[in-house]
Length: 80
Image (cartoon, rainbow, N blue to C red):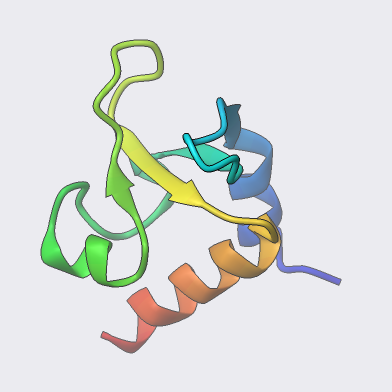
């Protein structure tokens, strides 16, 4: 079973349109992860700054397995 932290982040995640290559993308609010949008640390773990107006401050992540991606991001943030 996944941790409650991961489950709460997944619930707050919003599916975005696919990129031009057809890969799925998701919006994750900035308050969910302990890293600032647009920083080198965020880009190093695969998080890109959301630049739209619809959802506010947050990240865009490309993923076929969102749960694994969120777990990996949290683990990487905890290690640094």
